[in-house]
Length: 156
Image 1: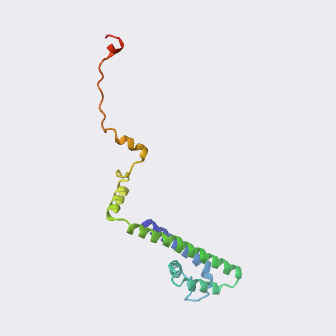
Image 2: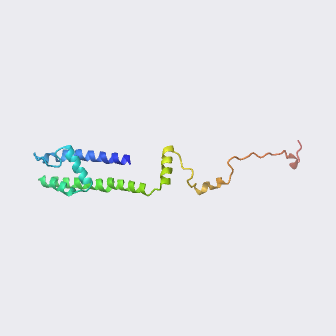
Image 3: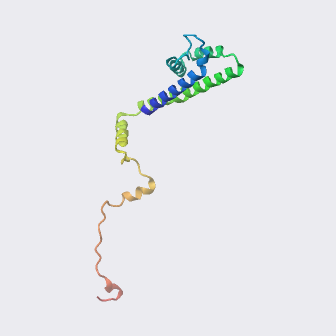
């Protein structure tokens, strides 16, 4: 879970810095523009990630761009970011939370013990091809062999 939070924050910081560099020139002295400084850029990218009126942020940036090809590139940038942020990263959070909720307490303890020891769970089912070894005793004993050379006609 902590790795996923770190990955999410790293992704958010990197895209906020990239968005600040891409769209900072569009502010033109407007103090309310979303990408005027890093904290506003971070907040705007987080707003897009959480899907809270993210179209307002995108449309404000697109309304300030004059050239059609730059408008298209900005549109593609926001769509790719939105796809990666919501469909991939946020979905991983939801999947991780749901995975932890469906585990019973006993299985959580077993998983934690397995992760802590780094060993293999001994209660796991062994493959069928190794099941034959359950028939053998743990400590085999040596068999005493008598000198039976007289059977074949030799005398000692």
